[in-house]
Image (tube, rainbow, N blue to C red; front, side, top):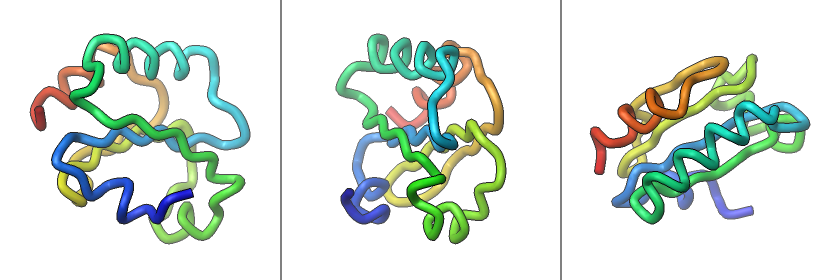
Length: 96
C-alpha cells in the first residue's frame, strides 16, 4: 500500500472510508454512489483499520465506519457512522 501521505496529498479531494474487517453493504452503496456521480473528480480509498493498526492509532480512529475527506494533504472533514450519499457528495463538492 502507498504511504498515507502520498494518498492524501492530491489536487483532487480524497474520500477515505475507514472500516474494521469488512465494509457494510450500506457503506459500499454510499461509496459506489459517490464514485458514480463524481467519477474522476474524487479519489476514493477504503482502509481496513484491523490491517493498518499503526495508522488507525496515529489518526486516533476508534470507531467505524469513518468517512474522512482530505484535500491537498489536509483533513477537511470527518464523518463517523453512516452518512447518506447525497450528504457526502455535498461535502466533497466544496473541494472540486
